[in-house]
Amino acid sequence: MPQPFLKWAGGKRALLAEILKRLPSGEIPLYIEPFLGGGAVFFALARAGRVQRAILNDRNPELIHAYRMVKEQPKALIQAIYKWKHSEKVYYDVRRLKFDKDNRSHDIPRAARLLWLNKTCYNGLYRTNKNGDFNVPFGRYQNPRLVDEENLYRCSEALQNVNLHESDFDEVMSLAGPGSVVYCDPPYSPMSKTASFTRYDGARFGVEEQARLTASFKALAARGAFGLLSNSCTEETRHLYADLPKDEVFVRRNINSRGDRRGRVAEFLVKTCERG
Ligand SMILES: C[S@@+](CC[C@H](N)C(=O)[O-])C[C@H]1O[C@@H](n2cnc3c(N)ncnc32)[C@H](O)[C@@H]1O
Image (tube, rainbow, N blue to C red; front, side):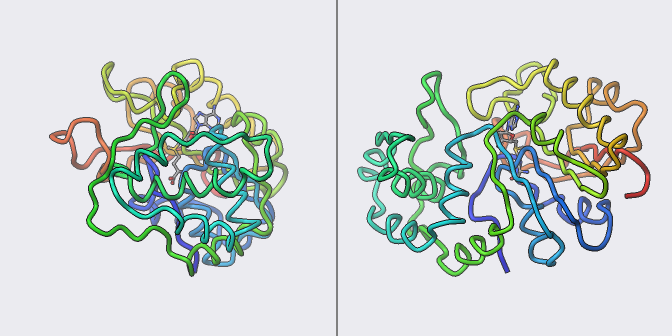
């Protein structure tokens, strides 16, 4: 049974049951996830054998490249991950490595680097500086499991009927048709002006993007598709989703820039229509 192979900020494991019970029941002819991250919802649906075909998208090209390699070459990927022994020195050596996305011989080490860093960096975070360089410090785990081989093969199998895209959310949402199910987990609208969790990859997901997403989300219903979207519960989102059915659910936040703010917070689960 495939489980997410990456830890990702905003991962949806804690909200999974709430999300699944709001999706239409039965087999999904086309499932679209425009903000993939760790893919907790996709893998849960795959475990239940409910996805006939899927389109998975994220704007982060390193992330989508890793999914591609898991799908196409899991064995070579596992072998490449084991080449780097776990230590602080090796961590910073691997972090400094640069690969050429147009050089096919770099495909495997490039994806292996992302998976390896995800298991050994601080808190499994993905963060880059202005130049796009990964800048999360060493994680100081005693003996991290660098890769769960069995699970990676299961993920690879689950990805066989999947098209992977690295575009803006809008491009893949426009591919939804009658019966499609779309789950959106965008970078959350900030709870305060200082909260920085709208920045996953150095690019902003600000007020205009939130509004643009709301428009694409609302357009799903007219095409006969069902949409579910999660977001923080703020004045901005209350206003954006004023005319859509939504529930407030409480969730424990694990990744937060301020340790003392960890705790249960309200989030919105918004639907395009009452029933899927
Ligand atoms: C909250 S995370 C997704 C978490 C994921 N659902 C999980 O369970 O782990 C949001 C993702 O949106 C991506 N993203 C940000 N802006 C985007 C855009 N304009 N279009 C597509 N993806 C975007 C980020 O790279 C990030 O991976």
